Length: 210
Image (tube, rainbow, N blue to C red; front, top):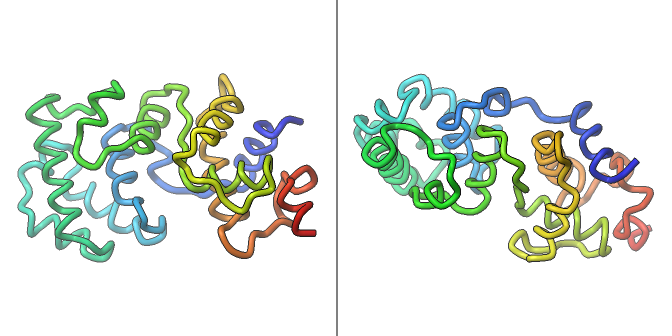
């Protein structure tokens, strides 16, 4: 079994369960990804649900006050910065895209706070496009597995090249989430759980650490 199949199978059995993974609504996925930047999923979950309950579409969010948005996302920290980002995002979506999330990479990246990873995530998870969601987890997982290195930067060209090479033609959504969860839960930055990793038998890092 190849590494992509192993990661996908592991995800199907062990993947984390979040509401933004059960939807293909691009706005809901975009909101989640913006909240998840440098913030744990457990922190994001209740805030994500509250924000979407109050402002389920860009049109409603664009009419909310900065203070109201800041009050909702306060537990995530940096509420002033984040509230302005959400406000600007909603206004952009309404004014430039009639309240719809664009499915074009250039247009997505023109939105406030949307970079390479979030763009790839929305295109993959919401629009079903075969995109590699390259983050720090991917850099760490592939760096250790193939090179025996403790870490590789997510922006390292080698990481994206390897990710895109492994990305399945059909199960790319589950593979992306599998890389994310395996890196976050098992191949952790400190104290990785190598004994629980489905890739450990052929992992260069595991061999170096044994």
